[in-house]
Length: 233
Length: 226
Image (cartoon, rainbow over all chains, first blue to last red; front, side, top):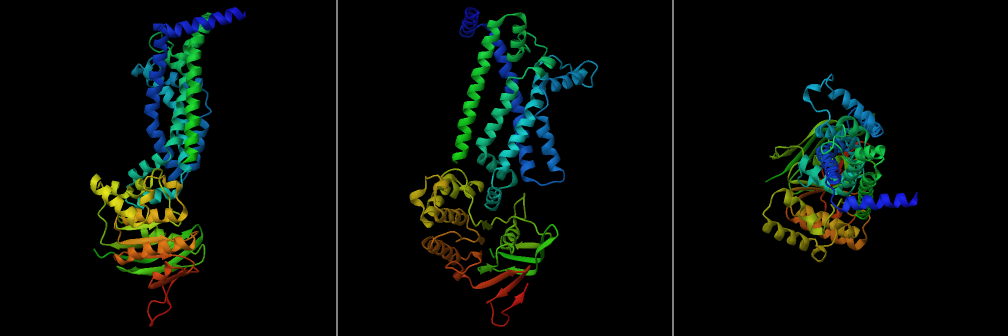
């Protein structure tokens, strides 16, 4: 048993370092889809987080509670909802997005947006209101003052982006439902792990798992060091 | 440019509680005003309303000549408000001092020279590259003054500029404010105590029980309610 486990790990490492084309295509699809989703979601989420923190309006607390609740929605439920919308009989069936990378991007945007909004909201809430007033009295327009506050909160906002990325790079439910796990197209790291493990092909699963593990450790390390810098400022 | 402020029927409420109601207040060019009042009287709120950082519930504040910014005519480019405890942006002392000039898209060489001049004026040249957050209380107050001075304001609101400062720092800040005043800048200084800075003022206003009273300006009307 132990020999099998060791052999599997060795095979996994060999797959990784030998540059196995299929393996690295899966890794590339994962990063491409998740990076695209984060880039699409980041700016609107940060803007919304700013508005929720700085602009009083009726029902603001409900919007904040709504996004907090969305963070808890299981990824497979988001995937199922999107599947129903994008399927041939759904309202957006004519777009032919189901089982494509764009569909996966949409799903991951929906998954990371609540995380980004809630953490951006917290980041801007943590900024002294005097920062906004100081920027404005020194001549900043609303947009320029927003940029100033974003720079003031840059470490916390970077933490929000990393947390959002962490949520989507490792999610399997939504990617499986709307991506279809098509080799060299929509098969990403989590869906490949699920498939290979179900086939008994553990080496590739372990190799991809190692990639996720290294990524998770790296993200957390960067997050911790960024938060530490934020506290020192 | 003669800058004047006219506030008419300004009322500020928080919920059901009326903080103050001011019938009329006029600030003329070159005036030095001391705004006194107990804690919670509304001095900060009044100054922020006059500076355009807050809105009155009723009434209006007019600053002439009008600002020409397309994005706001409430915050005048020649009017600056300084907090009791200044907020300093992340970055160095000179980054903070030059913040306003960067917004005005000043040429980099001009900006560098004026930043040096401002640092010298505030006696902060030796701290130019230091992180702003590492400064002492008195140094932060001088930095905030330099950050405003560099923009050549016509009107400045100084909210409790010497709160929590030792006597030496109070004297230094008073010296800087006096230099500002001698350039013709109108200043309104809020403080609930008399000190070297408020001693520069020639016109005294008192905010009490929701009303603004003028004291010690003219002999004919020593107590005039606004």
